[in-house]
Image (cartoon, rainbow, N blue to C red; front, top):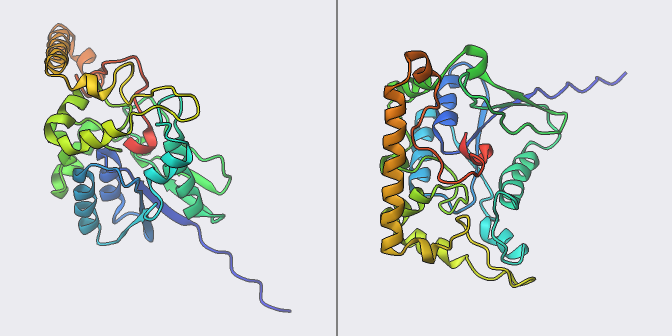
Length: 278
């Protein structure tokens, strides 16, 4: 009888977003999981600091980070959708540029997909409906929290993502619609060229004539007006001060139970796309 073909071993894949949690997870698992594959879904619209961070992580890991969407990025799909920019109600960017490329990369192989959700987070990451993809949450399993993730990044020498130095709180596209108003202001001040490119996408949707904006209820042309930018900065400073005062009046238990950041959203939108952030 002919030999039965050996079953293909399961693949181990860690998806990097350019954020702190997935970076720390890659560092944490580097010497714990053999044959780990690292990948990054590149929209071609990332912040330059994100690409810099990925290069730094890649050098530390000593293995290449596979860049998906190298030939087909955001602009391709933007035109395919008739110039309709994505939003929290029209998240075609997540589906077309993050989820589908990942599942295409995986194919029908049995895969363990490592996700950087921490033990102190009450949220769920992307879980594929494909039966061959099994999510794994090492930080949750081992009880690692924010201070542990910060320690991993510090001790490795990788550090926090460089965009955090100018106040950006998330990885993802420079025009991410989940940005807070203050983050748009900071983008304008730090990367004015990218702000102008983001503004150029705000145009009437050809099928209906509707005008869609990145920032909820306000165009970037309106947001960048000096008086409006100063107003956003003042409101942001007031929120920070209120949160600090709230912390001063809280018990230690309440303090340690709070969210890691005092930088709360300006709007009542979701906290963003976890596929992009983790």
